Image 1: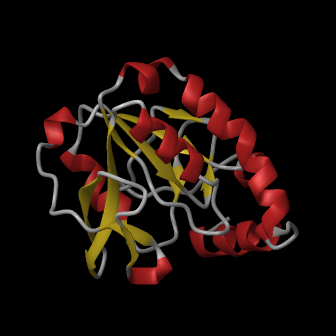
Image 2 (image 1 turned 45 degrees about the vertical axis):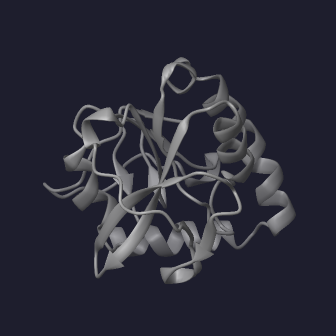
Length: 176
């Protein structure tokens, strides 16, 4: 199935659920994430501020901040380009591109210190291949942090047998 067709299929699956159901479905993957040994051991974690149709990361972000972790969130800076910025407090968020909440801090550039990257996706397969929303933000950014352990996170209904890939697509180390 071509990428665009798979995106349409996943969007259709997502529309079958209410916001409340998606919040409920977020609990299991977030619990697995919070219990993950790499998350527990990490000091610097790249996360994402979830959109309404993604696994809800708000509680995880707040808990990890409270635990003294350095939490980095993506900030869209241009067409297909993103940087990461630290989040010092849940109150330091403002709406950015595509209605995504973004931190207001300056760019974080100590890429080698990022130990774990938690990455959203439209779909993942068992081999860790990821289908994004089609803009390439993560596929451009992730090669800058080759040392980071990459965890894809999604709802069970987003997993597929095969995600079509291109040479530039970054493979996840694990999918929750």
